[in-house]
Image (cartoon, rainbow, N blue to C red; front, top):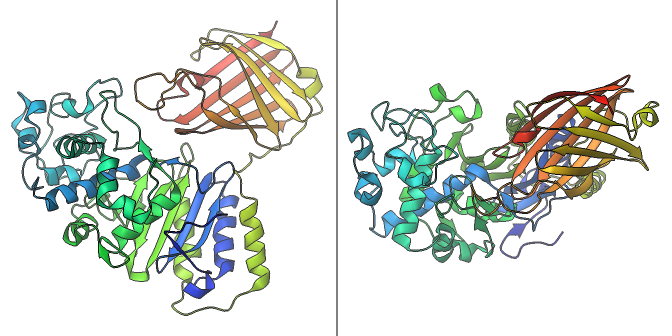
Length: 492
């Protein structure tokens, strides 16, 4: 694995972490079936361990989801440092073109209220089908309470703040941040951000960069805005942004995010703070121990999957830290290295073959009308693979599923989004697919999207005599919608 010249590297033991504990961290997540894409552990600003789960690697851009919000916060802090805004002033003063006639509660909502997710909204300020996400902040839904007092997570607030950044900077938010500090830390020059339907950066959820890029961002924030002794970000703003500004526990059922909220940064246990993104994207910063954790993953649909990542980190890494150099166990170090060379997505439980496979292979089933719009389906079992052929509203499709292995491919739908929300991409998402037999007459299909968008789809298939029953479940934001539901059918 090629190292990054902007980052420092060290052995775990030299920074007070035993390789045995890192190995246990990796093995425990694997045992729990957490779908990890990458992890990086840094101590004293140095990478002591990193792992990438095939097909992901250190150079691959990954969707950071709501970690993107922390980038917006930093941009707001820089604008304030330049004297272009005052976060204690109402946002409406800076974007009068969006406000018009609206509730006075919205008009008096300050930028600070928006930073700490304390707007007058009781839900997200925009809906997926809206065409102008910044503008609807003031018009879509009625105000439900006073701003500034109650935490209510609202990506619409971040979208509007990003709009303000791009309005005042005159450029996309990542370009603005590059000129201010990202270039100086070696942040990928071709990192980018998904666009909203109206064309601005969707920095509430859409930034794509490498895990190492995220590590650099986190190190600057963790060190009060400094990089190699140079003050790149306003220290006072970073201190406020990463401190508890508002209580989050009464409004959030997730334990880890109940330690308070700053300015688009979460507080976590052990006096830490974090950037948090849907599906297990984390940048956890622990200044007291000079420790940093970066992860990318897809825990969507996995109850408590993201909690498992942090719980395992606390148990296996944080609680076992030492502040002295440790002796190296060559055998364990070699075992860890071999483990990291073979990381991949976890496989579902089940058998790779069935004595009844030949009986069902090649049979085409006519499905009764169903909520997925799926009309026909066929499974062909041969050469250690399964080919799933089916017809739905978008046409005839075929997916190759590995048996006991992952099959890399393209998911056969072209109407999903890519560079801009609301605009069909005309391209197929990269995917990894597999299948196992849970009984001699029951198949389990698992498909992961490993593209710009992360998501997963699972299908249980039961064969009985000349009939088929299937249940498909998806965990993905704004795609796979036509792959969720039940269907039954008979052999044609």
